[in-house]
Length: 389
Image (cartoon, rainbow, N blue to C red; front, side, top):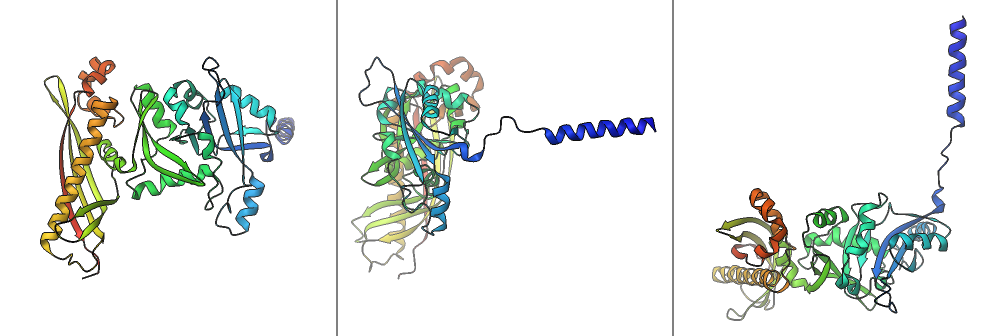
């Protein structure tokens, strides 16, 4: 009996302790400032000696988001009141966060952060001094996407798309969905991948976002050498950048066939496979690539033209092949001769194929990359012509 009484006493004591135990550090959800996006710029009036950064936070207003979603406006209904933008000038992001907490009656929360935008001026100066915060802080999602803006990053968040409730979500959706079917949008890069690139001292290319009046355009890419932006690739050059990187590229290629009388032709790529292999020749390398492309003739300028002519089909295949070879060669030559930047991760492939060489020469890889040549083989097939005959 005595043992039973002791057991009951211990059980009661533990039960009372569990009931009275609370989350002492709990913060109510309405006290969180859910950060959806962050923009980094050089302050307009900053002295070069100041070395300051302008941090723009896009913060969700949950109550307004719920209200607008219930109105059936297809999302944000313009988004003008569903987010709050706050810009803070500080020495670094840690200090900016402290100032944010002194400005806003909420605790910064990064669990819903979709996007970080680097402004052009800051990117040309170098993003290395401002990226450590995102790598080091455990609250920052490694899946947060990174883009570079042609202009001011803060201006990106001033534009409110009508289809979603925040600019950050809008750009994130473009990268996730439209990139798969557009030749102009570069594949997304997140902080997890960027950290591995920086550790390996590899260059990167980031998707480019441009503000045009009240519209955001996500096409083209920013080319980085180390942590500095050196130039831009256009939307049409992104197709080749993807292929040289070993990524599939779907979308529409415009070609012209003046001899046949068909006029401008739109060739829609529906499937493509690419294989890339580094080939070591003596003390230099060659990027050996093979691209197989299948597609449809989705549009021609002359609607009465007979697209079922076999000669015409072969001509389209030939012209598309020439366009791809020329574009890939131009982009590759820019990377090797003009920019001297390996943002296509060719060095990573060399590391995989020739690990011993890489260990001995990885610190001077740029010297080898600028002497790399391109061996390109392209095969194009027209699969469908449409229903007009």
